[in-house]
Length: 409
Ligand code: PMP
Image 1 (cartoon, rainbow, N blue to C red):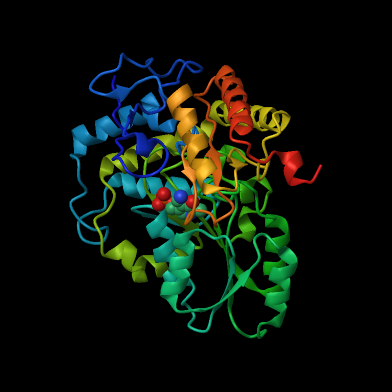
Image 2 (cartoon, rainbow, N blue to C red):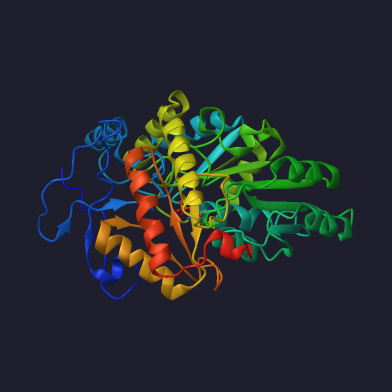
């Protein structure tokens, strides 16, 4: 099997600048699920290991998911044939929404074409209903959250990232009689840290605020049955809306919100990004459904992911490489310089066949350039050791600040 999933033009950063095509994640030795890389054909580097995929659990290559998708294509064709409200609702959309609502312990769910359109579409409606809502938004929220709030036209206050005291200050200063909405991420996409969900949900109850939690980097990976961080902390019911993606931990594509039935109906009725677009193809919904069901029943992927993430954090720590957080599977090694970051990424690829994309502005602010490394269950622990070892060498060669340099030791 030759999966030509990534093809990069010349002229951009990291792997892209080499113009090499990268065979996707052919490192499935651990579970024996995937065929080994085949010999290089038509310029494809089949031996490259991908360490920056958001297919965090390898579900994008799970045979059961692939079979579900193939069967759906055979039985239902490749496209949905319309928008959800006009001919484009398939049985898999309905089943998937019921599954997601059940997963998060909510009354209802609504799926969108992507996590981006879910946040944008849902927050445009929710932050603007009722009209005098005040939104409290984390300073490091994802672009899709920011865009949704902007499109709502609501008054907005930004609290420092995960800073509960600052959030409380802003809530206390706002008029008591105005409706309030707090919008946040659980696992941060770039920093890999985890929001203080207990403190924030407590504040929300105290100030009567609605809560919207983006669990895009958590669903499938954390909590009972992969229901996310709020569920892991036993607090899913304290968050009015739990939002997620089907394109990362679940390995397919699509986004969703779950929450009270009346709220979901409001979004279904008003959200332009839900109404005015072709719905997900049945096969995508069928694959996502299989993936969600699989990860509700199976702990193996979550366990292997957390073991690999813990090992990588430990080994990078021993090599003196500063990581922004050790809370999650998102292992962000801070470089703090765009040129060094680009070079480190190139050296990993050119010398070691390891692909880690360098992350710079606009994904992170200037000065916070980083290598965002995402271990997965399909990496072998030996691969983790090798990555930490070669990264330690690159850190020295490029004279990048170590953890002790940064702490002034
Ligand atoms: N929210 C967050 C926090 C994200 O990081 C992303 C994508 N990186 C999205 C939403 C959008 O999800 P999707 O890729 O499914 O559009």
